[in-house]
Image (cartoon, rainbow, N blue to C red; front, side):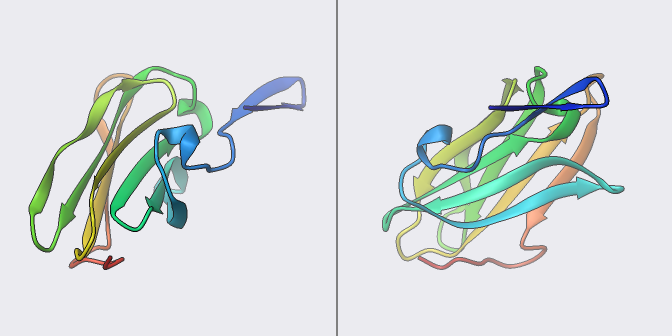
Amino acid sequence: MMLSAIAGYSLVTAPAASAATYGCNGSQIDSWNNTYNGTTYAKTYLFWDGTYNCVAAVKQGSYYGVRSRIAVDAWTDKDGYVSPGDDGQYLYYASFKFYGKGRCIAVETDVWSLSGSNIIQDHVPNSGYFHCG
């Protein structure tokens, strides 16, 4: 975890992406920001080890280090919804591993406000699947 001092305030930022940091194996094959109305609430990382995908949604900005609900889910072209994803009241991230060999995938990251409202539901890609393993 990095700590930066800006104008007398401390800003906590997420560590650099590493599969092991988020309970994953393999190499990072993609990442994207989960942004709504100009604010990035999470960054989603996708890892691949040759058999399994692992997806990690890492909180960003003022949500990083604050216990609130975050979820990550996935679908494959062969299996449909991959259950269970990871959904909970976390400080830093949600992640899970799922079988991906011979499958194309889609991922969704959801972040809720501290009051419990869903503020972002980011489905990637917007339609269809990608990263066929």
